[in-house]
Image (cartoon, rainbow over all chains, first blue to last red):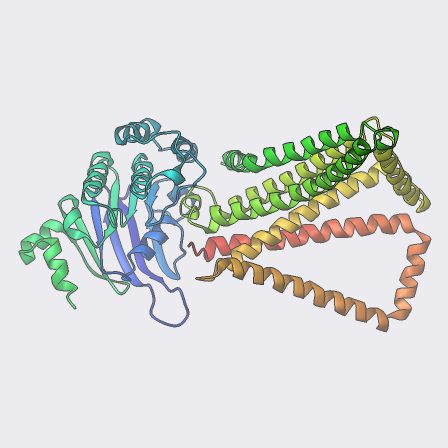
Length: 235
Length: 276
């Protein structure tokens, strides 16, 4: 059995026939049980790559394998995706939303979700549209991390939230992922996530600039990932 | 998974299906109560006028209620499809372990069921209005008599058979209608902005296409005078068969178009999904 949860070979995505591609010739290998930072400035192709892994976008060319399989219903069953958009159904209550996830995802742990919502003080009978933006984001994270997924895709999970919520989110990620699962976090707030990261992937203009372990960067470059990122992506 | 998808369609749909149905049936009951009294038999003139006005108003709201039942349901189903599939909810819906084709199929079938339910509710409302009265039952009897006379004059033997055939045609029509609407939304979502407008334009494009086809057909009538007359003679010789053949033709046409529109939606949502 392969040790890889994610493989891409010459993966490309073009939204329009003319103009620069969103992703170009991306070759990636991500091992199971790692926390990987997908780092790059805005427009570097992070969200496009994540959407393709989640099965929302189809590659223009190249190959994408998740646990050895092409994206489809089988891979969707093992991928837990936290988009950078609010995906909650407004008329549903918090409890309805939890039940919805429990119904469709075999790996969803209802008890874990209820425990986390309880600790956050979310009212199960409250409609999601009446939750504050911060609480909506927390609920979305709870739903995502309450699954025993093989691969967690977190697209900008800490962008636009206050520092306290940021800590809560990072703590939730770290305390809920298991050894066999992989977490792919897309962000440009590197300093906040750096302590949690094991591997990093640098993306620039749709191309892979670097794939390395955090330890290697610190050892070879003598810098933190945040410092190295600032150096590489300096204008 | 299909069962679960239907479950959540129902949970979403019941929010408007149940209240709308209750309003239509409630109005029918109210209408029936108001029509229990005959204004011409009431000697007190003001009361007679109020009763006459009430009867008029209740009849008006009954018609309005039935119209609203169909229109509001359809709008709500379209909104549900848009938000749930190509709107922000799509970030969850389209990452469920279900194929896009299954999503479209379940939503289309559910929409057809809701439309049939609306037909049943409207028929029940009509029956409630007609219980124990002469007016509505007379209309129903007249309608039945007219329809059966036409069928008999065409030489058909089984009226029930045509009812079944007509019902299948209605189901096919509903399938066609919703497959078309959902295909238009799936095409409209390709635009970065003004996606609803894109869907409307796709619908108008289809409408224009059918109008042009209709025009071509009409003009061809002028040039095919001989064959058309021959065809007319054949139809006159066996009208029942031709009525049957026309219904079957429309069922097959709607089924084929529904499949084509379903294929368009599936392709767009699988290969060209463009969430908000």
